[in-house]
Image (cartoon, rainbow, N blue to C red; front, side, top):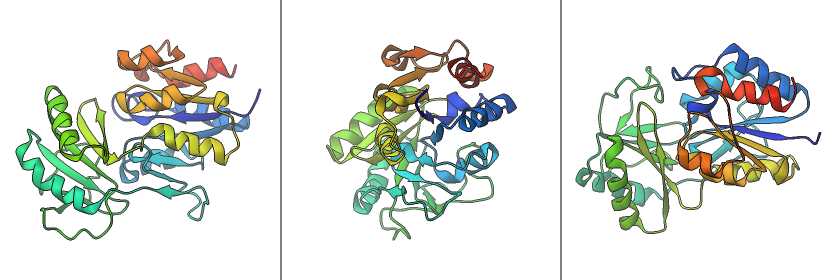
Length: 269
């Protein structure tokens, strides 16, 4: 069997509904890597809220954050495959002002080290650390680093309206991706950035052909990655739109170790 690149989403895919890794998932991913294959986490989360998972998996490979805007290897700080694509600061500050006209509960501006918000106290949410308070942001704030992404949290039924208004205001300068789950939000990143771009970058870095890429996901922000992979797999608990473009669907959900069981069968572990 050729060497494979296995790209795994986190929420709704590798993690269960409690945002946890199971021992079966950890053991399976280590077994696959021991066969000589490459495993990469590809998530919409910032690194600060995926660091614990990265360390718990302890695979030592790359992680992609912000839906493809940041690719790095925390176990190798000088890794030459790293890239980071940021948003235009003026656009972000304009969006902070424009946000006041939108039905958004709160807004987060993300960087690699800092996070800003238009509220002082964040709700209890697994995406943001409990021990770090955000810096308050206003349209005139001087940001201490170039922003990578903006997350806008709102009710699920309002996302379509919000997304339409943002895209109309900024034309082709940005991408707006959807997160589902318990804390639905819209994520704004630079135009042309999505998970497939990062997976393509990693496949070239490791000299792995497109047909030897396996990708696993469950949501709208996994769409390009699932379509790009030689073998794109949608989770049983995934959205129908993703299942319609996938090569396969896991027989089990993320709460039933669906990713691990699929890999066990695929690689005959």
